[in-house]
Image 1 (cartoon, rainbow, N blue to C red):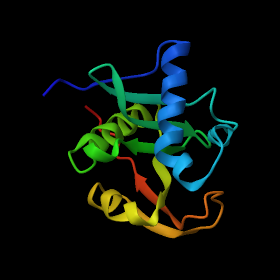
Image 2 (image 1 turned 120 degrees about the vertical axis):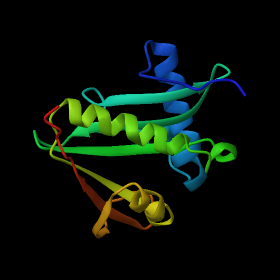
Image 3 (image 1 turned 120 degrees about the horizontal axis):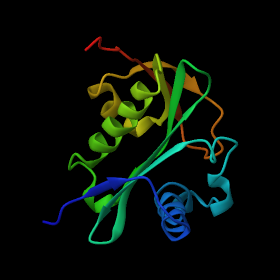
Length: 150
């Protein structure tokens, strides 16, 4: 099995492939146009992809809502690789970036079928999220960041 490389997209080609991957996994199956991926945080966000055999197989994005609160969006893993720990690796790296940038908490709006995944990794449910344009039930979840003094 070849190694997975996790990195930020580094050029226009990688960003285009990343957008296409995000759309194919998260938006295309529910009939959303690729332009529905972009929001006001796109330019300032930390983007992360997992690459295996020159193909993007996972992604996630982190942006800041304010100086204390980071938000994770667009978590996706290729369907045939779900349940293999790749999503946890993406989440760990996004959390690391949030900590490095002094976030006190991370929030996300999980599709309801993914709540168990996030709970195992320390996220707590807050409330139902009604702001999604997907028509898929979501729940807002939160994790407080513990800053170590080491």
